[in-house]
Image (cartoon, rainbow, N blue to C red):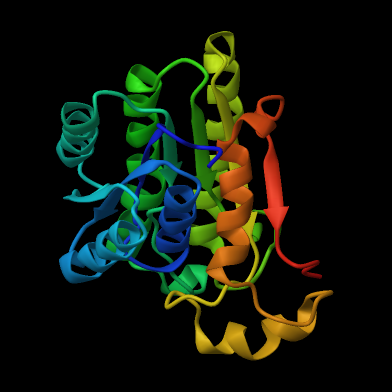
Length: 241
C-alpha cells in the first residue's frame, strides 16, 4: 500500500486510461476522486468497484474545459478529504483529420480540453497540492510523430509536455515531482479503427497497449520510489516503431 493515506484526483477517470489509473491508485492505498463530465453512471461504477475492495473513492462532476468547474473540483476535494497529494491529468479528447479539413469548432474543442483545461488544472494543483506531492500528465507518443491527420491532437499533447517540464522546475523546491506519461496505441474507446488494425503489428511486443499498462507506470511515478524523477517524458508504448 505505497500510497496509503494519500489523496488523488484523476481527471477523466470514468473510463479508459483514467479509469485504470484510478483503480490502480486506489489499489495502492490512495483515496481517489473520480472526475467525469457526463458519464455519471460509469463514474459511480468506478467508485463502487474501489469501495468493494475496501478502498476510498468519490465521484465529482467537472468539465475540465471549464475553469470554474476545475476550481470546484479541487475545492470539493479539499473540503471532503482535507488535503491533496496526487494529481493525474488524464482528461482529453482526440481528433483525426487532415489540416485542410479541421473546423474552427473542432480545433477549439481539442485545445480547450487538452491544453487550456490541463493548464488550469495544473494551476490549481500547483496552488493546492501538498509538499512532496506528485503531478502526472497523460500525453501521447503522437507528440513525437508526424502522422497525417494528427496535427491538432499532437500539438495539444506537445503543449502538455512543455507544461510538465516547466512546472517541474517551478515546484521542485517543494519536493513536488511533475512528469508526463506518453502512451502508445492503447485499447480504449478513443482508438480509431484504422489505427487499431495496424498498431499492434508496429510494437516490439506485438500487441496493443492496455489501460493497465499505463496505469502501472503512473502508480510508480506517484509513489515515493519515484522521488528523483521529475520533468520527464516517459514513453509507454511497447516499443512502438
